[in-house]
Image (cartoon, rainbow, N blue to C red; front, side, top):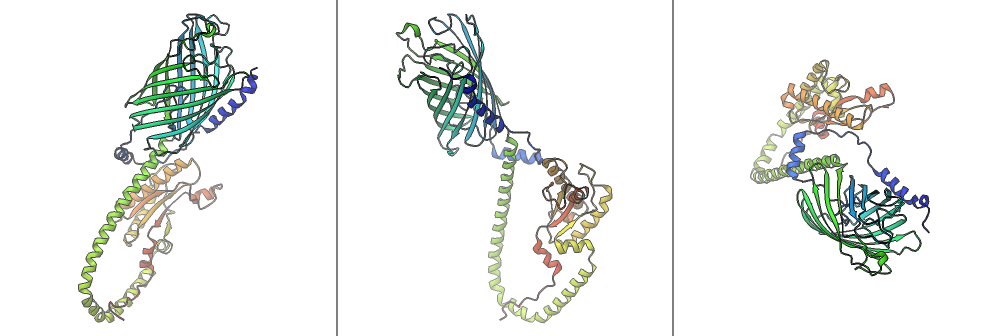
Amino acid sequence: MRMQASKSAFGLVSVLSLLAGSLPTAAEPIVNVDPPALESIDETTNIKVVPPTMTMQGTRGLSQTASAEALGEGRLVLGLHGPWYRQEREFKGVPNQQADIFTGVGTISYGISRQFDIFASLTGYGSQNYASDNASGLGTIGGGIQATLPFSPSAPLRMGAEFAVFNGISKNPINSNYSDGYNYFETRTGLDFRGNLIQTLVTGSEDAAIKVHFNEGLVTSAENGVDPLLMLATGVQFNLPVAALGIELHSRTSLNNVDMDTDPLWVTPSLQFRTAYNLNLSLGGDISLSKDRPDPSAQRALEPFRLFGGLAFTFDTQAEKRRQEKMEAWRLGQEKARLKARNEELARQAREDSAQSVADKAAMAEKARQDSLANAAALADARKKLQDELNKRTDLEKQLLNTGLLVMDAVYFETGKTEISINSKPYLNILAKMLVKYPKLQIEVAGHTDNVGSDGYNMNLSQGRAMSVMAYMQSQQSELSGRLTAKGYGESMAKADNTTAEGRKLNRRTELQVLNKDALREYNEPPVQAAAPGAE
């Protein structure tokens, strides 16, 4: 006896709940970057994004043969396929002759991580010229998870496993003989559990590759008296930039009574077009290889052929995140190259200086001894000048040079804008002239906001305001070019409680921050007399 429909559907509800909970929510705004920089990075990396080929079940692969390649974290796939076949010969347990049987398969799948995908499907069926009280209706609801081993992307071999549950909600299985019929799992009346081992051999890249897939599966049913099924499939896939050709071989037979000749055995040629709009269009057909049985009540396992077509919409929900990561990696690479060149130049200069210092060491030591008294006087004079300069410093200079940080409390912006208020420019002029006096300082213009608005919006706003302040100061004092940088911190570095108006006011600020704080010593501490070269 079959299990009650409500009881058998319980496991499927859990699978679909898992799928719904894993789908991404509305993404937070991402900090805008300079478009020309991103374009140049894309040209440098030369990465081509090609939509993967999909099965009728929503996983990667050919029409009915799964690939051991994962969808990829954040990839969402929505699919719809429509198979059709005609009943050519009438016998017990099958539709009447010349009946047209249609099925529709709707799928959704999502890559929850780099190695794990989840998927779900719902099928319905319809017919024409079919003498049955249940000529149309829902067929099967299913779902599952696929896991792949973390092989290197360049490895030619991929391996994975899949577990799926199919709950038959159909009032008409269409074919009721053994496990016959192309649509056996599409119009089920019972509860089935399927485990599948998957292997894939890959050569080439996704836009030009040859792939060979192998599937070995076992299906058990909750229905009494239904033998476990052995399911085997293999497929060869030829990828081209805009299309993929495939040829598959499938077998479905009873594990306790294996008969490859008369049980369902079919070959499937298919063609998938992969468009530039993340939309895959597929066409194909199933061609029966099963021989007729001697049993007149179940002569054919499959009709001579079945045709199908479908489409799958696939897109990467985390494309912008990966784009930003790629940009950051590019920036780090540029910085490493710059540092390497600088280090090489310093090493060359050090070698030259070392050679010169050997020749000049004796003369320098003698001159240092002669200049010792003059240096002492000069040192005393330098200390006096520094003290005089310290006494003349403004409060702004003292705050910056003593703490390395200056809150620019007279810089104003209109709400939600990055343009500097005209009332702020005299104040910025004073600061720009002040910074010119200390050429060894590297200064960061830091923008901060309160927590009103989203993280991404505040990050963009703070970055824009910091850039505006930096650009204005450089326009007033060209000597500051190369010494100022700008960075927005959004709401991440609050100084006060954002739950109060006064706290939010304090958090909306623009600051000057000394990046090389060691240089502050030169402007705050009197020079120390050094020992003369060569002195004991």
